[in-house]
Amino acid sequence: MEVGPREEILSWISKCTQCVQCLELCPTYQITSELSFSPVGRLEAAARIFEGGEIEGRLVETVYSCTKCAACEVLCPEGVKVTEVVHETRKELARLGKIPPGQERIVEGILNRGNAVGGDPARRLEWLPEDFEQRDSEVLLFVGCLPSYVVKEAASATYLLLKKLGVDFMILEDEGCCGLYPYEIGRTEVAAEIFAKNAERFKDLGVREIIVPCNGCLKCFKYYYTELLGPQDFTVKHVLEVVFEEIKGGSIPLQGAPQRLTFLDPCRLARGEGLVEEPRELLRSCGAELQEGERTGVEAPCCGAGAGVRSLYKDLSVEMATKALKGCPSEHVVTACPFCAFNLSYASRKRDLGKKISYFTSLVLASLPSGL
Image (cartoon, rainbow, N blue to C red; front, top):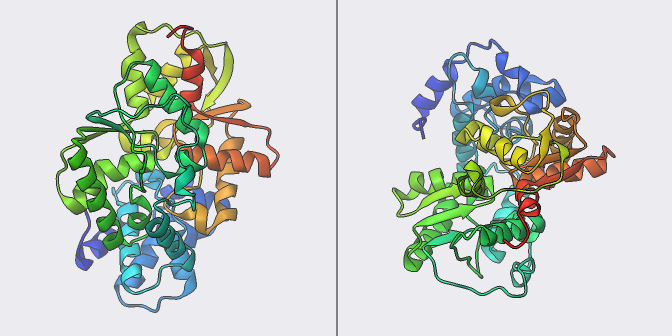
């Protein structure tokens, strides 16, 4: 992390000149038009908390309503790491016992059931094909909580696509949570315990590479494990990177039906990993005519689900998803984030927007030549 002790955090906060350029991209401000739901308001809230001010409900809401999408950091002329300040502030609120009750319930669910969505572990692999056979491999497909239990089409399509592409991998039949949620809400001591348990398991299995369809798992394994545990023996790739490497150059001719699509960039892939052109190249290879949204790439809108916001502020989250969808010109919207797929699909149904939402592996899978 680039912020740490109290003085350093306050130093970061002091860099904000309140030029308010960040408001242009902040998804919560775009919905509420309230400064308390903006990067400026969150930095002010952080300052009050670290300076020992009174902590009331509105202040906690200001901090926990941030999706940590990092769109504000794209525009900030001072380079203020707002998302890291928010994270450190959540850690301080957790230390003071000020975490919202809804967040703690999810942490308890992770500890008791091994997942962040309340799923029955006995039903986690229902999406697997009947001919599934476990195998040993140094490559692990870590499916993640949401694909395993909720966005099962993403899990199934990802598994089948990798198999058809000849990628050698194994899965964990008793896979637990990556530990992202406790980390994101400031419960880093709980996250560290989960991280350590998973890391030891990976080491025992000889895992050298982890493939993930979930962007939260990607950031967790790639950055947060190293932050809390030190360097790890495995590398991490998003399934988008793996599929792109397998298909680029036309070695596998795709045969998808022509269709108009809008690709909605996930925050963590575009702003975090710089994966902007790769998904578009893949979709064009599948026969897609891409119709770009109002904002794309590093300026793409957040779906509103991340960093615990969907579970705690559902209405706000759905409004952010609705706004993102209204900026997509096509009726068919494709993404490479299971959480985006979930929240966007919910918003489309709830607001009667008539949008079809797909996780990208389902389109690539359907475009593979027969017999592969």
